[in-house]
Amino acid sequence: MTVKILSITLLLLSVCFLTFYLSDTRVRGPGSNRPCCVGVDKDNRTAEVVGETYREQAARGHCVKAIIFNTKKGPLCADPKAQWVKDLTAKMRKV
Ligand SMILES: *[C@@H]1O[C@H](CO)[C@@H](O)[C@H](O)[C@H]1NC(C)=O
Image (cartoon, rainbow, N blue to C red; front, side):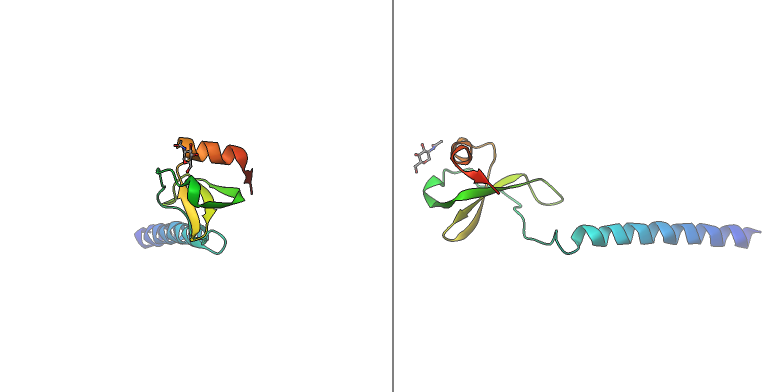
């Protein structure tokens, strides 16, 4: 009897562990593997921004909420609360 209860407990534990493991893998799986902003720039970088589109990133895991602009050097993570960012996005198109 005790052995039976023990095996059921073990079974439930492994199911829990497996569920956790699988959902954890899905979070890090393909698609969400894209690099994300882990910090934002608060300085006015208006002069460096190129193009007329920007992207918006939601906070998720170690990623922070950010506006992503393009610059000649690559993507720029900007603070959505900064005034220069608000000024720029008002003139640009979200993609
Ligand atoms: C940021 O800099 C641009 C020019 O580089 C300027 O036109 C703009 O007014 C500045 N914005 C703020 C909020 O300082």
